[in-house]
Image 1 (cartoon, rainbow, N blue to C red):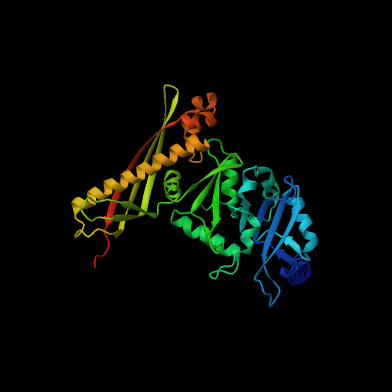
Image 2 (cartoon, rainbow, N blue to C red):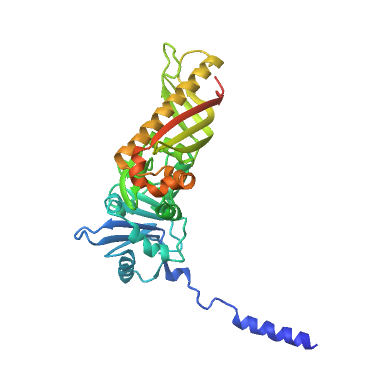
Amino acid sequence: MRLSKIGLILTIILIFLSGCWDSTELEDEFLVWGMGWDIAKDNPHLMTLTLGSPTTVEGAEEPFTTVSSTGHSVEEARMNSQVYIERDIELGHMRLLVISEEFAKKGIQKHLDSLGRNPNLSREVLIAVFKGKASELWDLKNCSNPLPVGYVVDLIKTNHKMARAASVTFRDFFESLSLEGKEPIASYLRLSKDKALVNAYAIAIFKEDKMVGTIQDVEVQVFKMIRGDVFSGRITVGEAIKAPDEQSITFAYRRGSRKIKSEVRNGKPYIYLQVELEGDISEYTSNAPVINDHNIEIAEKIIAERIKNELNKLIGKVQTDFKSDVFGFGEYFRAYHPTYWKSHTWEEEFPKAVVDVEVEVDIRRIGVES
């Protein structure tokens, strides 16, 4: 009986103690889905912060609402925007950070600090650089998704799976900033000519925290092969099979691997990159009859040669133009050649590194012929 009374008392106490005493209703919060950074129009020492949130007002004409303010830092600008918003600004639902190219070239690490300290911010927030004013992106109206943030996030993630975009999270960017031997990257976005759609087929290259350039189109695909991120995509080769009226062949690769080995020879860094791809023929525009084993073997060699050339061109471009090891080659020298690593500055050594590339292509299927 005594135990029953104690249990009853404890139950009553728990009833009165339960509940979220510090809870906040959704109606009382401004749920930020997207954030944009620009250099202030009238003062290059100030930043313009744009916050985007789904409209909560029933019957509103626009499904997305934005608020902009300026400040010397993200936190100051955010607090300055609060004077225009009747609800508390909440970053826990944020999905996308967009930084104008002009802003990214000045350096962004110090501005990431306040976001990094926010315990509510998801580390899966995507980071993208935008060609133009970041605030312009929130004005985008797309029939497939009325919310510009949702449209852009889905666009990046979908094209990332096909090796045509970079899906870079807050966590990815911070890790690359802190690692020795690997520089950060970010998605790079551009508006179409009619400013109705977004093109994500490019990557922003950083050196430390400053954007130094971009790689675009097929460079994105081979970049992902080097990084070992995604082995799923399509690449087209003209004159793949030597026939009188041959046009082109498209290779849809769906599996792959890459191996990297490092070596220090006569005090110079050498990198051996091996890429293997397996896939199918998704298009063959020749008027020649059925593709036979001999022609398949020829196609494999020519496709492999095309990819190898693209890999060499990209590596040379990054070494010469950007001098930024976004491939992460330096991590191999830091791990396997510590004596060399400690006695050299990789930032100076990377542009001089010799990279030997080998590519192997395996065509598994040729599809259904009509």
